[in-house]
Length: 515
Image (cartoon, rainbow, N blue to C red; front, side, top):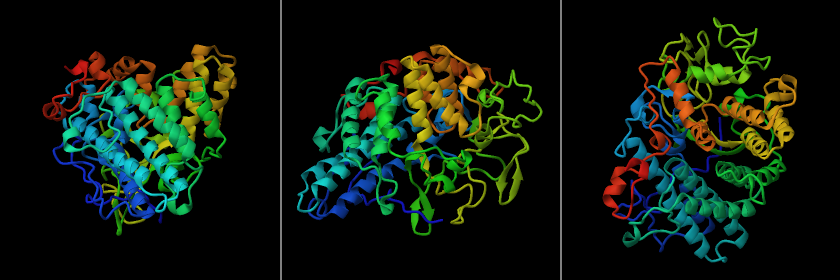
């Protein structure tokens, strides 16, 4: 398997970064005398921002370490973080503290990326058009603003009020206070306006993986959906309308999407790319697994598994097709593409059959390798699977949610039908006939869960809907042990700012829920 990977790590001599953004060592000092002298320099620095996304705590993931976004379905009711110290488990049980390692790593890696992108923005703006044509500069800046928008959006979802840093800092400028979530969101919106206006619809094959206009519109729609901005020029409905005219489509094979064979699918709007080989070390571990059982630290919860309907479109409590002794039979095909059931073959080399062992009795299939990859990497080591940050099915469901929330029930139903038709599931009309607005909202929410499970979006959805407490109760009710989800109000809906950041920065205040 060969693929072009643009997100390579760059030398720290180009963008010097430390483990936290308030470090006494500059994060963004550039060797001005020998850098920013050509277009290739600008692209190399931009690649360093993409490399930050590959960090284990962001999109690189883990098999036995602090969880990144691919494991964040453990924040809620979709999965159980069996190795609780990795982050989601201790968060759910209410024993996470501001000093917990996963919180600090997630914060630091995002601000490392922000430091790098701010250096790109400043220096690309300053570089002469004799060195880089203005059209190329605008596209470079479009990518930079997209990446900054993505990094800051992640921070606002999980930490809410955070420092808004939009330019390289000197040592004297390093200690900064928080900005409000509204202020940070306003900057994200401005960044994504620029990105969506200046990024191309596609790139040459040698630049595959760079952000495009579709990626900017998709992220913009996600931000606006989170903030319930459904209508208007920059509302979800208008943004998704633009994106839907760019030529994306659903992959006819749902399961293939989450393998290396699906990495260049027309459904992928934006992905973080990975490649582990003899000449590349930019691998990931979110697709890694153990030989003895499927990915032991991330296990699908029974309440998630039970939420997949049977192929007749009916819940398992109503369908005559459901067989409690063969839970995977006659189910929505997305269930069997996402979850290992007892008796499933989960390893091809060597052949291994899942015995239903483990605390939840289910295993994660989506994204997880089934044997050594084409480069010979073992299943428990780094791999080359891309992680889809935005895909077209998500875009359709974001639009469906916005339409349902604004009363266009038929428009929402038609979009849900498109997503269901890809896997052969019945339409809304054939199952429920004419539905009311609130029922349509619940249908969209269910569809998001079964379509996007184990893709790191569940916590964001639950928080947007105001249903995190209900998710804790579902997780608590599942027969999983030892596991004790403990809803603590706002503390269960936001991360604390890392204690080491509070300790070194006198201007930084802890989130009120954690004071």
